[in-house]
Amino acid sequence: MTAETASRPPGRPRSAEADAAIAGATLELLVEEGFQGLSIEAVRRRAGVGKATIYRRFPDKSALVRAAMEHLHASLELPDTGTLRGDLEAVWRSAYASAPSAPQRLMLVRLLIEAVGDEKTFAVFRETLVERRRTGLRELLQRGLERGELRPGTDLELLIDLLAGPIIYRFLIDAGEMEDPVARAMQVYDTLLEGLKP
Amino acid sequence: MTAETASRPPGRPRSAEADAAIAGATLELLVEEGFQGLSIEAVRRRAGVGKATIYRRFPDKSALVRAAMEHLHASLELPDTGTLRGDLEAVWRSAYASAPSAPQRLMLVRLLIEAVGDEKTFAVFRETLVERRRTGLRELLQRGLERGELRPGTDLELLIDLLAGPIIYRFLIDAGEMEDPVARAMQVYDTLLEGLKP
DNA sequence: GGTTTACGGTACGCACAAGTTTCGATACTG
DNA sequence: CAGTATCGAAACTTGTGCGTACCGTAAACC
Image 1: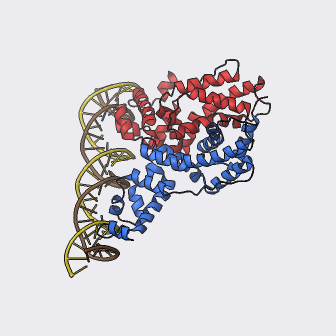
Image 2: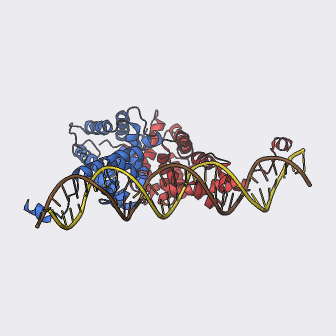
Image 3: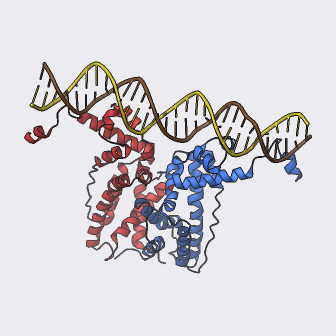
């Protein structure tokens, strides 16, 4: 309390409601319009906020978007079904329960690609949309490896690429459409384990 | 000649030079600025052409871009080294000889994702950037399958996803940077053939 | 109560691109 | 040569977002 009072600058404090409204509107518009398509004007309208209230907090669109993304703490709880295959299925199932529509499934690719050239923003997107998921997957694979479900010495980073890449690629070329993403992901996994040698 | 003369409408014919300049400028700007970033103003400037000359040919940006892409007939000759592995290596080598910089390697992903929502344009991009390459790959894989280098009954469409997906995905999350794309592609291929069972 | 800063809302000037129109010159037909 | 449609260039209207500045009001401090 003392510290709070002592460090508080004079004048009216900034509104936490405005903070939340701005972040919420920004995230919504990112999904709907993408990074390039997002305008501060639109954020202002949707948040029901004055323009100065946004510019008081963020110097430009990139900073606004970075801050909004950093507020996005997907809980991302790891499953533990006892088998690697079961864990992977659970991960994919929860991932695509939270992104049931084609545009939502394309968001990851879209935001990443639109942020290329804006180094800071790309880094934030990559951390939030990519690395966090890879970290979870890595943990699952490590457990599977220790249980003897994978060939010893397997390169886990490569394996993550092999598991996620084909699904992301298929989303990309089919504009986010896919009948049963989970089934396809497991088909990829099974093929990877079996190998394709005659 | 007769047909040409008979069917030619009165007045000055449209300039083939202008056609070529417009298509060339459009393709250059697509690589540099992407689909959303391309403006007809910029095309006009780079092509050294009047604005009406563009609008006389194309009603809007989408039509302009579609026409320019359709002029893009990558020769795409198929290698024949005698082994599937050799063929794949040759394909990847030529693919990334023609796209040596990070922005060029990102162009496929970038254009596809930016054209989502513009159905016609997406279809043209997909045909030009994706299906043409898949068709070549499919032929190589089919030959390998017939030579007994792949397990009989292998789903070639899935295999194409498994080969291309991890590389495209890696380009995406690393903003087009990759030390040796060919080596990585072959690492993917070798892992796919061996399988990962303990 | 006086001071300070933030609030939502609005107006403004600036930049830039979309398209349309006009210009004199040019190329081809009949 | 007369007619027509093109050419590059430029002017023009319209629309939109950026970023700043200014309202009257509200919420905190001393």
